[in-house]
Each structure stands twice: as C-alpha cells, then as structure tokens.
Length: 360
Image (cartoon, rainbow, N blue to C red; front, side, top):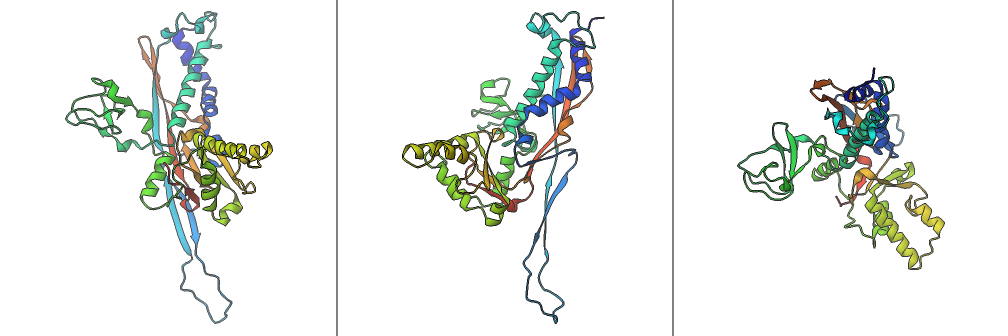
C-alpha cells in the first residue's frame, strides 16, 4: 500500500529521529568550538562551583597550633535551563508538483519518499541556525512586556503580542495603537531571540554589576587590531593563565580585522613571512602558542574579545545527541501538527578566569 504524502513525513519522523537530530547537531558549530563545555541532560538548575584558596603559608613553628586566616571562599554560580519549542504544521500538499515528488509514487512506509528526508533536514538546519545566530545576544523571555495599545514604543523595545504570544521587537518608533499587524514595518518578529541569556548578555550583566572590569581597547579596526589584541589584551592575561594556555574567542569580523592589520604591516615592510602569517593568524604573536585565536560564528559581528581557559564557556541542553523531544502529533484535515522542545542555557563557569575588552 502506497504511503500518503503526510504519512511519509510522519513515518520518517518516527523511524529516523536519530538521523533527524544528527542533522541538527552537525549544523551547530557551538559544541564543536574548541574549549567550550557542553553540559548535557540539563533539566534543572545546576551549580557551577569553584573554590578560591587564600594565602596562608608561613615558617614552621611548633609552638603555633592555630591560625586566624581563612582557608578560602566557595564560589557558586549556576546554570538554569530554559525551554525552547518549535511548532510545525505539516501539510505536504504544498510540495505537490515539485521535484520532491518525482518518481516517489510507489515508495512504501518502509522506504519513505525523498521529500520527507528533505523536509526534516531543512527543519533541523533552520533550528540550528536560529540557535547559532542568536546564542550570543539572546535574552531571557522575562525582559519582554505584554503589548499595550495605549503605549507608544521606541525602537529596541520588545513586546509579547497576540493570542499566540509571539515576541516582536520595535524597529521604528510607534504611536499608541500601532501593532505588528496594523504596522508590520515598524516591528520585527523576534521570538527566537528571547529564550535564555546568551553569553554576550551574561557578560553585559556581570560588567554592569562590577563583577568583571573590562580591559580598555577602544574600537578595534583594520589599523589597530593586532596592537589591541596581541598587545593590550595579551598583556592583561596573568602568567598563571598563560601557563595553562588560553583561548581568544572573537567574531569573524574581529578576526578579519586582525588579519588585515597583520597583512598591512607586512605590506609596509614588516618581516613577516607567509609561514609566519599562517601561524600568527591562529595564535597570539609572541605567545609561544599559549594563546589560540578562535573565530566564532555564534559571536555574530560582536567586537568583544573573550579570553579564558578551556571549559569556562558552558552551553547547557537536555541532551545534544537527542536534542529535540517530539510532542504529540495532532491530525488536521490536511496534515498534522507536532512540536519539538529542548532546553537551552549559556553561562560562564568561573569569572576569575575571564578577561574581556570594553567593546560589545
């Protein structure tokens, strides 16, 4: 018995879940970024703890049997999972008369039509893209307020609007009563940006709370990137961190500026060989390979330079190899609805080993 279009997608979802989710995992660069720790099975808030021992070494004295010094301080941070979801309304009729149907009429449930695999592959790639693009500047949903028809909104404000509780960011100042429906050009759909605090948002909060004091670099340009990163930022790294080896996480924008500055110096007469350029593009000059430069897709166009030890950046989810949890499949007249849910969180393990510049 031949399978209907809808049944093919549904059967593929059931039979090939590991393959579908592997597409999602393979599309994410975050867990494959060197030095980032992935915390799987994150379903409840978990502590990220450290311990800072105090100085106390002194000359031996058999007459002394006590101390007035403290042993140290327990440092407690935490990572809290936030739930994300994507609802899918599947109507395979939209694929009719396309290449996805060519030659597929005789395939059975045991061999689902080609379009089913294509459908799920694209869905997972899109979910991965949404996570990756928003991971750095993502914010917790609690920052948004319900839309108020009597309020005039300014660009940048975020509201929850409509019966489906979608998040919209104001992009152009509005007058009272101008909604995402009546004035769509003044609003941008932004639900995928308001799930949990991303690493950039966490940094901004810690800096605002005086938990981190940024290194002053000023704006990074093609004419100063090498001086700011290999000079100012590397000079701010304590020797004990240098000995362990550090990572410099930057956006591709900053990475390209540094490379452009290096190339400009060579063109101006600096004695960099092509071999040295190939090495220095990935390591801080004069660091003896103790400082690796990692360009990151997930940092977008950020001008922040994040210097830290391995495993200090933490990404949490319920399980990356089984990231999505399928909900019920609800039949509709022309298809069915389903939902995938997973937890997501971003955090820094220990602020003591975190050095950043003053650019956002």
